[in-house]
Amino acid sequence: MEAEEAAQLAHELDWPLFLRFAVYHETYPVLYPLLVQLNANRQWTPDLVMSRLRSLYTRNTIMMLQLRGEMERVNGLLEERGVRSLFLKGPVLAAMLYGDVSGRTSGDLDILVAKQDWDASVQQLLSAGYVLAEQYDEEEVLNNTERKTHHVSYIHREKNIEVELHWSLNPDTVTEPSFEELWSRRQASSLHRSVFTLGNEDLLVYLILHGTRHGWSSLKWLLDIDRMMVQFLNWNRTNMLFDESGNRVLGGEAFLLATQLLGTLLPEEAHALTFEPKAMRLARMVLPFIREELILYPKPERKDIAVLFNRYLLATMNPRQRLLYLTNKLYPSSKDRSVLPLPRSLHFLYFPLRPFLWFWRQVKRQAPKEEASS
Image 1 (cartoon, rainbow, N blue to C red):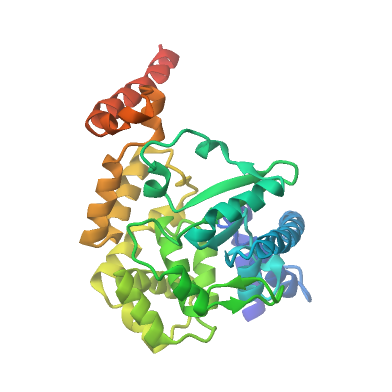
Image 2 (cartoon, one colour):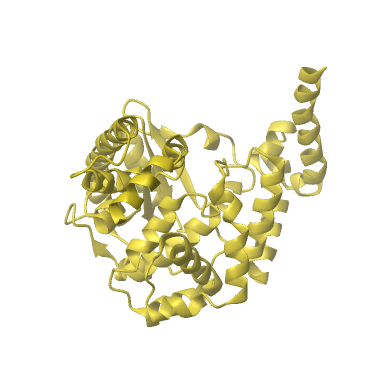
């Protein structure tokens, strides 16, 4: 009877939609091996679906192997200058949580270095053929890059590989451990003995804050949380990190989503966080981002989604974070300089001029749309 029910379910499943969401949520590295096992004795999945998943899986494996090789090369270059580095996500996380670099997708390498090692790190990337990504290739206004983000991207055009060099794990609205603290709790990757990543507790909190900033719009990030639950975790330290960053409720949101959507088995310490009413409210707010195929980064394309996403981001912040976030919005940016170039000695004028420059950018942005419609 169970076999008959499974066959009926496979027949009724909307396979084209299944494929679309496997691509959108980047879950095919996990789905394909599972379906291969499921189809070992009887073909449940259409050949077209398996062929497409096989192609995606193979392409991702090749990409992740390339990233692994580049990770080891860049790590070696940083070591030459005595730079301590922590690799975030990428091949390190895939091997750690899924047992193989092919078990997870990644589009770039994320590397955290101490601020005092920033210049040396940049020099090594440039010497290795990397160039500053175009979006950062504008003259800064009053050190606006450090105020408005927490990393800078470098591109290797020949290899088509991007490195995000971080000076902090999160935007400056989030209180986080110092680099020295993170380094003291580091762990070596199984891929290479001199490649290091965050300790388990720091990694869990980082993954939760990263997924929160992106509205949990990809189930891939929830799968990471699911896999983290079977790792050894010191929950006293984890709760301390949540409390110090003021983001305990975000842990509850992530654990609630994981257990409700993926069936994640939670330890008591994680389960206790899911009862927070705000965690439940935040979890409901992200459901549209999970259900629909949306572009949220760097900015949502749809206005209705942009409104929901901004409302969600503000709801995730505590009062201190909200104040810093709004203050940063008032801080001048390179976009202001593109509208009204001023000599560096007069950059302070961008503070009172920012509202007017912002308004003028909106007017110019709407003008091409109106011309196209007329």
